[in-house]
Image (cartoon, rainbow, N blue to C red; front, side, top):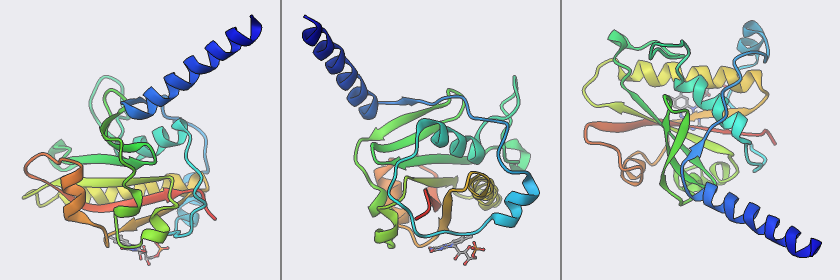
Length: 202
Ligand SMILES: Cc1cc2nc3c(=O)[nH]c(=O)nc-3n(C[C@H](O)[C@H](O)[C@H](O)COP(=O)(O)O)c2cc1C
């Protein structure tokens, strides 16, 4: 009887986790305290291109996304980066082993676009990219002359979080910009600017 019960519990857990990987992912609250002091993180910020292949846990994924473009003040939709006229013309997407997602910062969740693992195809440096834990894709509004500032600020925030948490990261312009725009089904008027690869250091 005990064995049957254990088997039932195990299959419920397994079915539950595979559903989770195929759908939206509700993220844990980002950790807004701790980490290395800012001046130490600035001293450690650097690009890193050798990753271990180990996946991030949901907490780290949440922290990375919140650093990039999260809402950081209660009651107002203001963010961890400044934007011209507060227009917030930036969309952040995440490529994970379980698929491609849009970061819905207000709901603090990842909305699934596809369950395809697209990490290695995101750019030309495939050997490096396939060992990442997560790739951020920054998409900007065409015609907004300030858009690049938004991506720059978000990528720098993530670079500093990575330094603070001892993770590797690198901004990549040599990416498959057009293909990413297509597979991510970007709304008309948005285009991919750069990507940012992250992972545990090798
Ligand atoms: C907009 C931008 C595009 C970049 N594109 C690439 C790239 O395609 N591939 C790569 O390996 N590094 C890329 N980098 C990382 C730079 O090579 C790196 O920042 C530079 O060599 C300075 O090294 P550091 O970041 O360790 O200080 C890019 C950086 C920026 C800001």
